[in-house]
Amino acid sequence: MRVFGKEYAFAYDYLYQDKNYEKECDFIERVFKKFSGGVKTILDLGCGTGGHATILDKRGYNVVGVDRSKEMLDIAKRKANEANLSIEFIDGDITNLNLQKKFDAVISMFAVMSYQSTNEAISSVCKTAKGHLGQEGLFLFDCWNGPAVLTQKPTARIKKVNLDEKEKIIRFTEPILNTLTHTVEIRFKALRLRGNNVISETKESHLMRFLFPQEIKYFLEVAGFKKIEFCPFLELEKPLTELDWNMAVIANVN
Image (tube, rainbow, N blue to C red; front, side):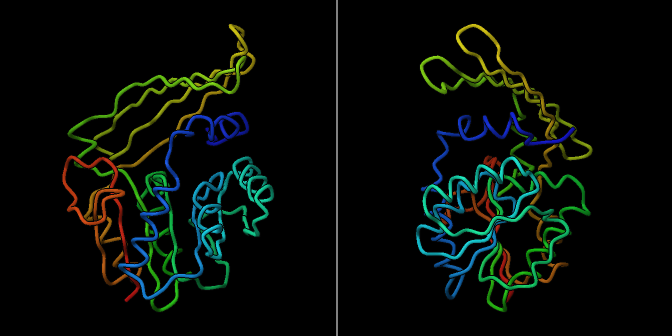
């Protein structure tokens, strides 16, 4: 099943309107300052609707965003145009990407790496990141931490958000855990309602992989990264534990 299609892309920013992109970009900048000699250019792999790219561009970085969902990119482009930002957004597959240019940093945020459900895909994205970095470059991403997923287990959820006084979206989430493949199939059903009337319904199945620090380290080392660090997402100074569902991974070329 195709993910991030037209209806789900439309609902995306509404569903995640409580996500603090400014705080996440603060974290990204803290990582840059601690682990890099200086970042001016950023490649955003799996940029989605441009939540991080637009903020980072406003903060003075030169950002290029890549995503394989045309519908998500259309929203990102519209947001950038409305803010008079000159971000280049590219329709592309991050497992098979060669822009023939180098960046100071590559980022891949909001569990994009967990969408790489096969070893081949994870390996390919690590190589994509390495291939687009200069000699002092770094790769930053967040993903699901395997020990926490297995300990806490994903649960079914319902989320409701208002579009305006008359319309709302209700999303039902059903996770199916597979401990042998290290994946969770997340079945989404989103209803768009005007009053009590359903005006659209969309279903998507997203296959997410939870990852373990040692396997991540292996994929990154094989891709050519030298120094690899882990921490809870948004908590740079804390050690990663089995209780941290979202982990951040920082990998340096040298």
